[in-house]
Length: 454
Ligand SMILES: *Cc1c(COP(=O)(O)O)cnc(C)c1O
Image 1: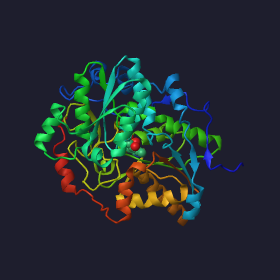
Image 2 (image 1 turned 60 degrees about the vertical axis):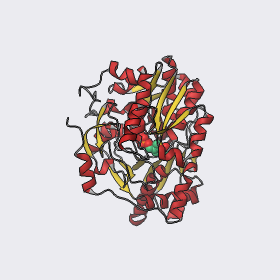
Image 3 (image 1 turned 90 degrees about the vertical axis):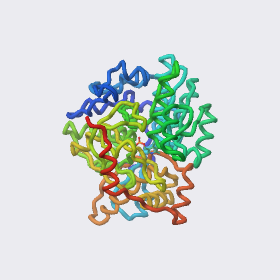
Image 4 (image 1 turned 120 degrees about the vertical axis):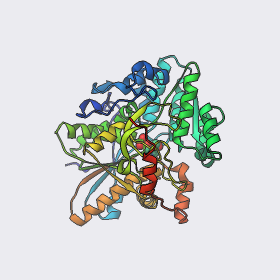
């Protein structure tokens, strides 16, 4: 057998030609989105008022297994895909583990994360529909950056509502968006009625993803030629991200490697859903078995401690309701939380798979997360995003378990992006200024009590 190279590249021709819609293979489909007023399942016509037409169709489609990737999107992908699957030989050696560790690196583009995979697809469909522009929210800033890049490529206007605390703490992220021609507004703002209402009720608030989503939706539905797009949580985003998993599977197959454990960080769930899609499909169809592990912050533990219920996707309650693992739409992680993955809910697809016992989830403290990220950075030569550090933490822990048992398991994890804009957080960790905050059961119960009664 040929030695497995450090970087397993696929050729451009080997890059997948279709996205894989995991929902088509699920026995228990994720519950439908509900209209927040009527509480009835959202129709295509309703979704089309907020979202691009083709994207709304993709959101509702839970039966087509493969959806062809339009050539224009595939050609854009060629600039940064296929992304490498890297054998972490140096990390393995440092850990002294018999495990084989592989990571799929999605940080090889200017936006620095996997988010460009969906941003370019969403901008393409917006352009095709003849729209003038799109609105969106961004938290840490990766999605806003990716979408600005995609919109500038297609000559679309891009209005980003950026969670205020990030807007202030990450001026360089903001500037990248400006370079790509986007407008960036700190949220909550006085530009929208929902923003003004939130500011009145919570003066001096730092903002949250939920607020920023409400503002972006309000602008999109009131501005002619605009629609709202988003970078996680929804099924259509997971669909676009399936390219990550399809490439990973193709690269492993090329060398006859069978993954034993697949690990990914989970915020709204898009990268994890994409990474695991083809593996989970095999698992559901009974063709292969894999351990699949979602990793989330202990300070925002939607899968491990959330309720499985219909909830609002945004603070202003103007978006459709989704049935998901949720901490409640008013939940905001403690102010000292620095590791990203701060959304209150989780993709309805991943939530259902978790409820059905098809995947595991675990949560970790942020200090342990940064410790793992630095250990990784020092041997593997990539400065990982704090979000990615969650997956690194559990990959290292699993590799250390293999050291005890002497098992040479194949561990695959998603390295979703780079951490150049998160150096303040790294600095706080190194200066031992970073604390761990874990919400109490009482806090979570109080939040669950406000879930909509459906
Ligand atoms: C946005 C982001 C995540 C989390 O989002 P998911 O939708 O859960 O994938 C993880 N890593 C990076 C680098 C991100 O930018």
